[in-house]
Length: 207
Image 1 (cartoon, helix red, strand yellow):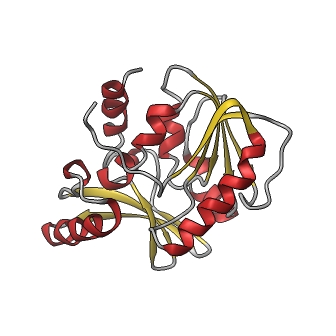
Image 2 (image 1 turned 45 degrees about the vertical axis):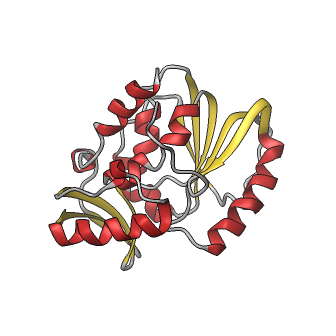
């Protein structure tokens, strides 16, 4: 798939995860639906300026969106801001892939429809998230989930791509954690494999 095809595929999930996931709560975690207002869009634009070096295609638009929350913290959503911030990873995704963090399950849904992706293994620490999200998704058989902590996970497998997406937002702590995870997961790469973290790079759509 070329970059334009991947963008079109990813765009199908923007504001559409309510068709896959029902609102529910387990422990401190919940899936909720929320209408983004014009005021929300203005606030999100300011956040993007600070965290992502503003990109027009990341602008939030008024719509109904699905959110994964931990207590009162919004961890992930199906907004274009969230989904398109994963494009650098999606453009490079091929072969056997290891992902840290399940979130709303958007990445495995997209990857299951991408040519060149052989298998996807997801590491998720929180059983409540697994109960909320994974049990509702209908992913293909080459998408597997392992309950575990990305900082202690161990395997004999080698992967072509390792992608870490465990953070709700960007700060100095996430930078430090990304460095730690990069060093750890070098041991799990195939000969030409690479590691990418969600907070490392937001791509320009000049394709």
